[in-house]
Length: 188
Image (cartoon, rainbow, N blue to C red):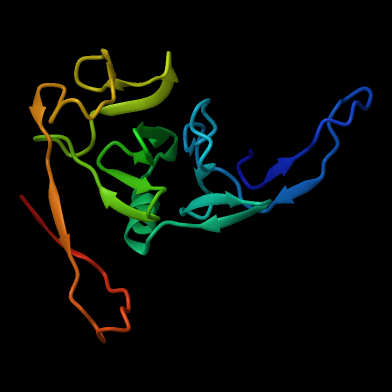
């Protein structure tokens, strides 16, 4: 993956370089840590913040934008995108990818295709750093203490602090056709 385009090259056992360029994807990457989903044990999707200030998902050999306009505006407002990180989080059957900047965190739920903001208790963004599968467990770093912790549903806390929860409601429009509308939220 490069700044302005990404290349795919299968191994063809050529000399002196074993790869042969097959496809060029005209979408680069915004920073060195702005890609997620390539980690062992994840395998649901490859996601990255592109040079167009949008989150893209690799579908076949094409980049498909998956971020909402609100997130696109937040990404564009980040002055140094090298400080953004994109990492997977798996919790039983829930697969998500978390995009964090110095001032906010958004999470993409790959099961539902929806986005939501994620803030730790009394913080602007999530304390979770990274995500890696080790010994059949998903581990992450804690931004506050620097410790490694396990991501699990066995606790209702986030490293000793309450978990912020939100309830999303949508007004019904043209019932029963079921047109989608933008969710409104309130904190519990």
